[in-house]
Length: 211
Image (cartoon, rainbow, N blue to C red):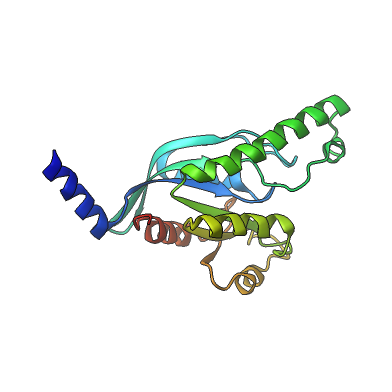
């Protein structure tokens, strides 16, 4: 077993880690579950979770294991983690604007707060992250900077996906200029536009062995 163990470590050092746990992070309503569903449907024929226009629809971690992504001759097996939206402030009044009762809104706010805490804890067990940002909005928000700071401090490999490029007002170039030191891939998780570029970036970035 010792010989095989050493051989496995040697192969990993050359070819990289091919089965990784990847989390999708970002602010509420950036399209994280839509992206998770797109990836899972493209490669596994199943969805990960339900989507809604109401913020914090995803309030618990959702997973889809052993999705095999291929890019030419290269492939990557991922356990995909769809996380609740990260927010620095969650006010139940915001949910009432969508027609929820006060009781429902307070319950959602409580669950959303717990979801943020859970999402942050999950960073300790990930091999990489897709940071999904809305390309129609200002990238310099407290939430975005907080998430970026967490990823950089943990030295987690990550890709920034500039989502919603199918919408009017989308400016992915603004995201690229805002974070020039990081990989930024413009996509539409809803329509599938440029998903091939994201898959290519994922195989390239996350196949490398985590150091």
